[in-house]
Amino acid sequence: MRRLALTSLAVVITVYYEYGHVAAFSSIGQLPPSRSRLTTRQLHIHIHGTRQSSPERIRNRQRCLHSVLFSSKDDANNNAANDGAQSSSDGDRGDSAAKPASPSPTNNSSSKREMLKFAIPALGIYLTNPLLSNIDNAFVGRTVGAMGLAALSPATLCIDQVLYLFSFLSRATTALAARGYNAASNGSEEEAKDRMKDAASPALSISVFCGVVVSILYTFSGPAILKALKVDPLLHTSATSYIKWRGIMSWAAMSQSILLTIFMVTKDAITPLKIIASAAILNVIGDALFCVWPLQTGCGGAAAATSLATLISSGWMVTALKRKGMLPRLKIPNWKECRALMEFTGPLLAITLTRMAGFMNMQRRAMTLGMESLAGYQLCMNLLVFFILFGEPLSQLGQTKLPSLIDSNKTEEAMATFKSILTLSTFAAVGVGFAAYLTASLGPGIFSSSVAVQAVARAAAPTLFFAVSQTVVGIAVDGAMMASKDFGFMLATGLASFVLQAKLLTYCTTVGDIFATFAIRLGSYALLSVGRAALGYGKLGRAIRGERVGGKRKPSIAKNAV
Image (tube, rainbow, N blue to C red; front, side, top):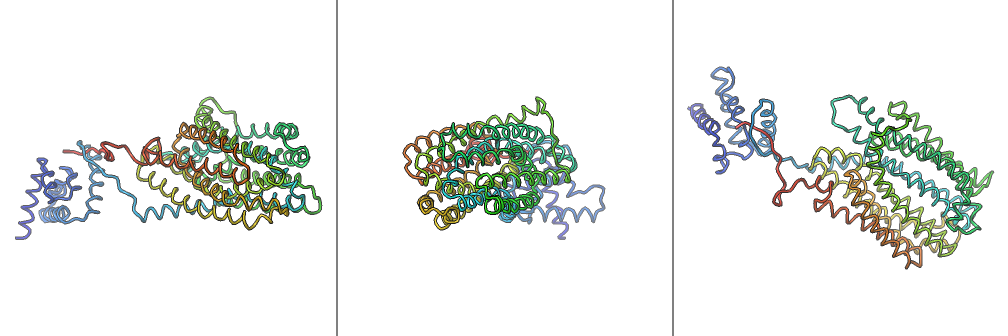
């Protein structure tokens, strides 16, 4: 009797499905909404079976009725997804709405853990170079004094800012190599590596060529550069020796940035971390030998130790990439490769120039405040560069994870990734900013024995906190903006903030005031970028918000039979 009743209900529901009356059931709440997306053919197969015996048919009907009338919401969603796949394979036609699944809290926390597993080793890589710069400052400040520390300020400006100028090559390589490595393909891992090597090869070739030119320039033009910057003649000897010995290995430093990018794209942060950490140890040993005993060569010795460590670490990276089959070959780029590279390098070069000009304006303003203030500025600037790099791994995450999500319109995953990056960068900004404040307040004696220089650093500590905090968030957001290729907005905000900072610098009378202008500049950029994306503007905003129709998310459409 029970079987007869269930069979009768199955016949009734079959009739409704055959004539398209499922909507009537759904509207009065007798069927889960997702069941209205079952196709006629699918329900017919479930109920009647295909060449099945009578008992099998009855059991199928019972299972179908139980699924339709008593299934949970999760089962309904899963069946709806399966139905969509089945309808495509059967060649059925019709329209049905498919709601994308929202990422669960478990998935979000897992995503953050995966990000941290990559970000923490990457952080060690990015912190190594500025840590070594601070070690150089400590050796020079303790062995040469305030004059040696002041000489490092224009010298490092010449070296580091030119290397920063060419950072657009590594950023462009990140975007191109990530898209090549993560491209949707049924190929093997070797094919993915080949695509990545082809994408990175033009940038590596250009970086080697440009690095050689820069090395020659620094070897013979150091005094002329310092004279053009109007550096105090008393600092020329020490600054020139630093520029010469650091500049001679510019080609290795610029190539290393491209090689490091390749490791980052493949999510391998451990191998380069080992290489960079080993080179850092060699650098510290070299500083001790060249600055303390037995050579005691001051600024030039510190630069020589850094250059030697850079050369060794670059060689190790080449060997590691070759062993993994990921080393790009040097070649003359063709027109197609240059055009693909210029899509990124052109806008990024303009953006980098505006940011570099801002640093140069800060340096020039600090040079008008006196010898002690300039030495204190150099101390604080090295702390700033060291601590803001805590945001760089999050920038790399955005540049490596978001491009494929944006290109494939995976709205929910792009939104979850962007939110995770913002969350991690916010917590990092507060903690790192506070660490920078404590270092400038309590530890300036580590870098200089001059009481006046220490006083300058302590006075600038509060504004250094805000500068570091705003920049950590800004760098993380910057990676997401580059992943979306929103270069027009980046350049416009960069120019506007550059003009604002240049105007504010004319009123600065202390080192703390100079860093306050930097905090305003980076803070405004981060706020405007996040606001633009949150409102759905730009490619990133459209990717994380999805298309909007009448204030609601436009549903995706799948084809089903009627």
